Image (tube, rainbow, N blue to C red; front, side, top):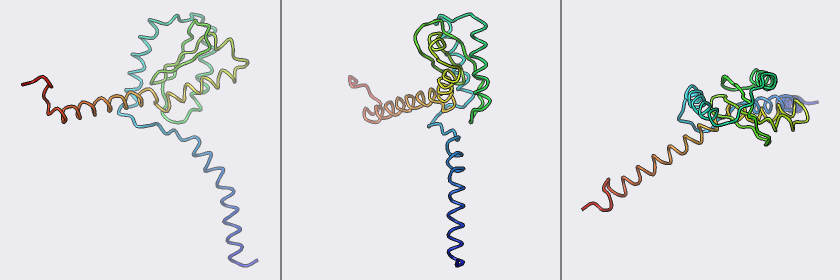
Amino acid sequence: MTKSLRRTALTAVLCVIALPAALLAQATQVKPGFNIFSEQQDVDIGRQSAAQAERQLPLLNDPRVENYAGQIIRRLAAAAPGAHYPYQIRVVNASDINAFSLPGGFMYVNRGLIEAARSEPELAAVLAHEMAHVALRHGTHQASKAYLTQAGIGILGGLLGNGRSPNAI
C-alpha cells in the first residue's frame, strides 16, 4: 500500500468515526431563534403568565399525581441541554389530551393526557416536547417577532405619514 493510499484510507476511517460524534453533538445543541428577552425575563414572563393561567384553569389537587408528573420533569430537566430553567409542572383537571408550556419552564399537563398515555415513557416524550419549547424559547421568540413587527410598522407609519395624522391641516 502506498503512502498516499494509506493516508486516504486513514482519513476515510477517521471521517467514518468522527461523523456520528459530530452528528450527535449537533443534535444536542440548543439553537433558539432570535429573541430580545433574556433568559431571566423568560422566567419572569412565565411566572406572571402561570399565575394568570392558574387563576383560570381547573387544577387537579392530587399530590400523588402532581408528584408523578414532577418526578418525570425532574429527570428530563437533569438531562436537558441548554439553559437550566426552574421547570415545574401542574396537572389540569381536564379530560382532553393536551399539554403546554410557558416561557421559563412553567408546564401544564391535562389529566386526560396522563390517563391516555400507555406508559410513563410515552408521557415523558410529550413532556420532553413541551420542555423543548421552553429550551428553544419559542414563547418569547414569538413575542420578539411580534414586538419588532409592531415597531417596524410604527416607524414605517411615521416615515410615510411624516409624523402627522391624515386629517391634520
